[in-house]
Length: 624
Image 1: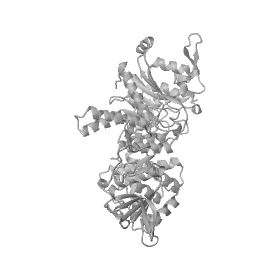
Image 2: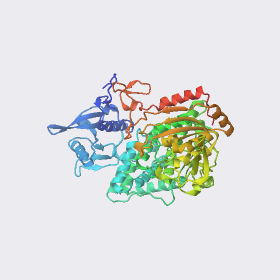
Image 3: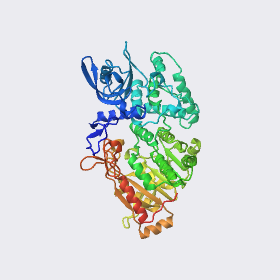
Image 4: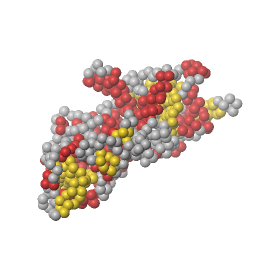
């Protein structure tokens, strides 16, 4: 069927394989996801795929089956090869439904998939009639070929979010681990997979065949677990700054086999960085939220900050509360894209050398949570490099302690006044006040301040506070990390910028830096990620004392903006741009047919453009 030529309403979706116009429902989204996999990852042609196909059962027809794959482009019952049942939330119900379609049909394989869990079946002609298998064959292969992959056979993943979710759910259901331990086991296997991909051996060692799975399920020992354990030993040597030598894989052989089966056919190295990054960040958000007020920065805010602050290839970049590394990775990508644009005269290898140099030398991150520091390292590795600059440390410690930690970890010294660019989203909230006197005494903002009632100015007292919220201390620490001329972006609760009792904080900022911009974020920004705090992003330019004093005397413009649309709702569901008739729109404002082609509904792009115009008008230049 040809693709419709008129824009459709948002309640409709165009079927990926057949071009049929369908009602957009959660069930339909799952079906489209697996259809895309069948074509782009398994290699089946769209004309081999049918939807809502009725199954002949004796003299009656049952179904319809959600998705079917035929041996070729002949769409007939006797030509059925694979039957797929999607979006049956209950595994038992869904599998029974799938088996009722497979049993009377000639189809060899079946798949049950609900977007978060998956089962692959082989249909047998005798008892037990059905058996679970590690995967269905790709086009042109047989079941015996599954798991016997060469590196050249691997394909980039078109989507990884649901695959990571499937792995998590299987471990959670079969091992009884808490979510943090589940996350760590998945993390190990991603490392193992990528180390195998980058080895010189043309054969994949990260694999599970149908025969091996059958042996494991029967309690027979084979080479599979030893093969994966050997890969993990290599991981621990290559990434000794990520994994301790005593760490081990804590999964049962059956569970390990399932996770390997989900990842083995993909080439993660060649999978698009955005696909990897989006999946990884989504997975992190769901399983590694902190309990001390730290939470992750949503991508639209990362994109806003990175475009505002405009990292250059000569910048020295640091995030002292890096979390999972979103600011660092996207700064790296921003610089890499600029290298591609600015140096088309260089070969791809030469540009890659420039990119790797920037990642290894110019990017640093710290986080007090060692698990998050590990996550940030993994995120950087997914983009090929830069992870050695990440360390676990309390960024509010003395610089002596921070430098010791940096040297010990291999990240290098952390010195004041060494960075041209600081971006961070520190933990904030009154629940986590810093009370350690040895920490507070380092900071002007760790002391009490008094306001002169006559002139309204604030003066620092010698007396320490009983406790100070970390976000306020981070303002000072970030400024101390900056070189003169360096620029900074920090996400802060609105109270820091508006509460009358915190006037000393704002005066401290004005004495230390030029205020470039303040962007107010919508109330729902952080609700899906664990907090309801209303926040803004503050952008600063650190100037020499005399230059700042002169500028302050004459006054200077400050860019102010209110972000009203962040691209998702309070439940974290992505919102897409639509016109008055409800049709999806792309970035150019043109009607499109599916969400995949639509632009996310956020006004951050408009704000970024307005700030660019502001910089041109007021002759503001950033230098690396």
